[in-house]
Amino acid sequence: MGSKRTARREFLKSSAALAGGFTLGSVAPALGAQQAETHPTHPSTPMIKGDKDEIAYGGRSKYETAVRISHPVGGRPSPDQFGLTFHIATPLQDSVGVITPSSLHYVATTRGAFKPDIDPKEHRLMIHGLVDRPLVFTMEDLKRLPSVTRLHFIECAGNRSSRRATNVQETHGMTSCAEWTGVLLSTLLKECGLKGSAKWFVAEGAEEVKGASSMPIAKAMDDCIVAYGMNGEAVRPQNGYPLRLMVPGFEGIFHTKYLRRIKVVDQYYMNYNDFGHLDQDAKVAALAYQIGPKSVITFPSGGQQLPGKGFYEISGLAWSGGGAIKSVEVSTDGGKKWNKAEFRGTPQRMAHTRFAYGWSWDGNQTELLSRCTDDLGQIQPTREQIAKYWNKPYEATFSVPGLDNSIQPWRIASDGSVTNGNA
Amino acid sequence: MGVSALAQSPTYGIGRTPTPEEVRAWDISISSTGEELPPGHGTAKDGAQVYRAKGCAGCHGAAGVGASAPNLKSKDPTNPDVWARGRILPLRAPFATVVWDYINRGMPLNREGTLTADEVYALTAYLLFINDVIPEDQVLDAQSLPKVKMPIGDKYASLPDWKPRTPRLKGYPY
Image (tube, rainbow over all chains, first blue to last red; front, side, top):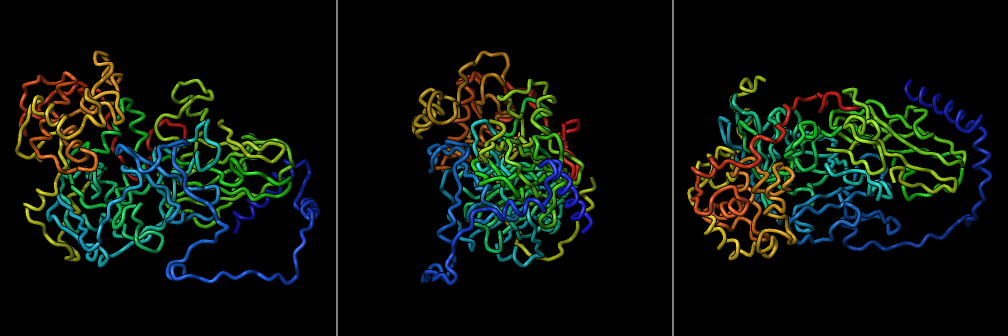
């Protein structure tokens, strides 16, 4: 592929510039010079007998220990006492590819670790309001209708880097990406027949507080999915079993879990979740709903340790609520020079996109950054640019108003330790 | 945007038509005009009793402040800037119907959906009264509740129209 060749040429150029004449050819001996490890030629690997549970529903290796953590750092323990939000973040630092395993998908709830116990045979979705024909669907009904399967990220509006955060799970772990299967909401709304006065819709869950959000009907007709499938199986209970409304590119809270009702209306309804979206500033309000272009390097990232100088494939994730990612650039010198990264896989609309950039570390202190551009031409901003937009002084305590999609710097010390550049 | 052009006969014929009673029973989304409000009524005096009887004070405090759950009364009630009075539902909500809808869905903890319509009207009246929005003896019902004038008025930002494939905010640095 032409773009791959270009990226490769740029990589060779940049590594040469960075390492003062270093090329891949001269890196190889450096790697080869690493201390040799001694392995028996015919090791006897211990065998573990599978048990009934593992045969029925497999698990990961005991050596794999990536787990979710509460968010924000030092967040409330589970179960939450007061019906407030309780969040758990995805270990992005251990992620590969673009799919978040369902067991590691981030979760935001209204009731801590509690989740509704819903029998899918009893579950119903009612669509009513400004439609010609209100309809009630069973899960069986929904599975008879034409389906779509799409990769989509979900990101919590509170996913933001802070000075206290030490790793990418703490700075960016409230975003995850899964393959979602279900019926387009537009298919269901056409089946009901939208009236001309339809402007908004309210989506409501079946959980204890019947959480509800108002959204523009244009979004419903564009790409919302009434999803029953997630990563090849039923949506997990923490993620909305048996039915979740996917609202691609919108803040996580709109992706209504345990979806039981859609009411088509002519005005913004301000039900429950919408109260939290009330803003004083029109610009902050305008920044809500649709998530901006955002990317972060997951390797090397905060808390990790580079064993020594030499070659590393820098790897990270990019996504945008505005569409597909068009390009990602990586800087290995604190933002002076930006280099085109390669994609690993094909970018999809409102989905995590894996990017990579070959880097030869010379052992000196530096800063790694990534920035993305989406297919609307939106470019991920620096915190400094955002501060300037809001006429605020750019200092360490600056907090991005609204959704924070600023560039995340990772600082590499000469001993190979990686820390948060915003700290 | 030509949504009416989408109105058409069903393609798949899948799904059941709910009865009007079924829709009414499920429909707990209350608009600012209050058209979905059920019959019932209550005053702040009734609400003060419900507040005690239902254990609201356990999380929100006897006076609606300083406890573990969100404050229900402003600590700075005379600040001319309503936004500066804090994130208090019965103050910041642009419509009294928002308060009614919130209580009806989300309260009390672990017993959501158990309050009667009268109790929700009464609690709404109580919260509005302790924030000096309505007098203690005002009866709230489906007719009077949507007419309550909230302190925030129209001093909140309206959301711009959302359009597919369009940046969120013109001039923002992205």
